[in-house]
Length: 86
Image 1 (cartoon, helix red, strand yellow):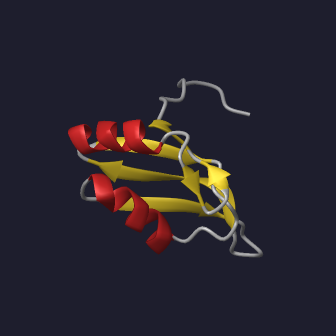
Image 2: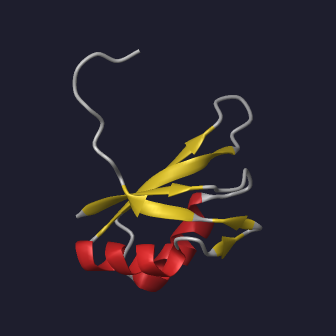
């Protein structure tokens, strides 16, 4: 299972619309769309999980692709360094 970062999402993005786009490349196991606490709008990024080969296909097909007026940024999630946080 691979976790993908998806950026440059418009505020109107929903989990259903994101799942519909990524489902073309395989089964989406989970979606975590980051939303504004007060408005409920998408903050512009989120994470989803797919199988490895499906995730690679999604990155190849969707990184830089047009989605609701924005160009998507799709990549594998990067590990945060352990230790002190701000």
